[in-house]
Length: 153
Image (cartoon, rainbow, N blue to C red):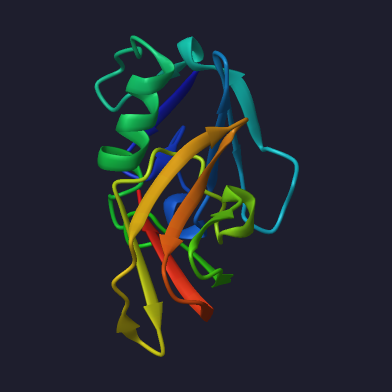
């Protein structure tokens, strides 16, 4: 069993190291951004929150991770993923969730496009689950080279 309590896993502070959570079925995997091997890989039912209560689902664990656990002084600032891409004119451009730092493994709550620090008005933004990551789809009428895409989780 693993206990998750205000940035700690089993009493060890991890949230300032910006661990990355991915899920597949009932399995959760937690790894550091610069490593591909998870340091925790377990069924979500083997995890407890700060009150030593189990989670009803993977979604409940992910929600706890993003709101109560990761947000507790996390170095990532609560979950922003960034990528740089060229957006094609008069088309939908798909940016893989794996192209973001860190990868987008949680449903996005907001997607914003910047160029030179200025927010860009684009035609449409969307996301789609692709395996264990969420891909971002941006439609625009003008080409935007070196657009910075910020995704808030």
